[in-house]
View 1 (cartoon, one colour):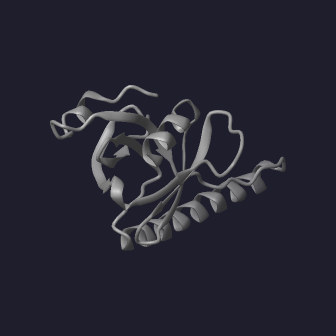
View 2: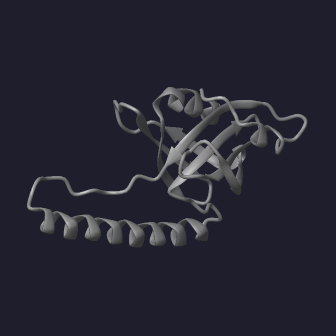
Amino acid sequence: MDDPRPDVLGLLEPEEEVLAFTWARVPGSRTSGTTFASILALIVTFDFLRNRIAMRHLRKRSQQYGLPLERRMAMCATNQRLLVWSAARSRRRVGPLLFALPRSRIISASLPFVGGARWRTIQLQTAEGALIRLQVRTSAAESLISALAN
């Protein structure tokens, strides 16, 4: 488990204890391959635009459930709730709080796929029917899932 940032600990209620803390992300897609530089520039531009549009749609859909997601986030599971913050590009600074989800609203938490080098995919399902798939640091994936599943 990554160590929670001091600014994260300051937002907890007195009776809350941190069970897991990690950095999370919504991955983008990238076209791979080798080609001429001029064509590669078009592919990179296309990927950039496609990812921006996909993230805009994801933000809109997740906002409908009251769970606004960002590309980079920090997640903290406590004994009472799941706290999610926007994270800076360097993933070492925590930004504004995006949402706090009571643990009673989390129906299931799982690792749907095997493996993963630096990042593992987690899947959360809420009582409202939202299905959230994120990637979290491999070092904290198991502890986050076990904290949310109990």
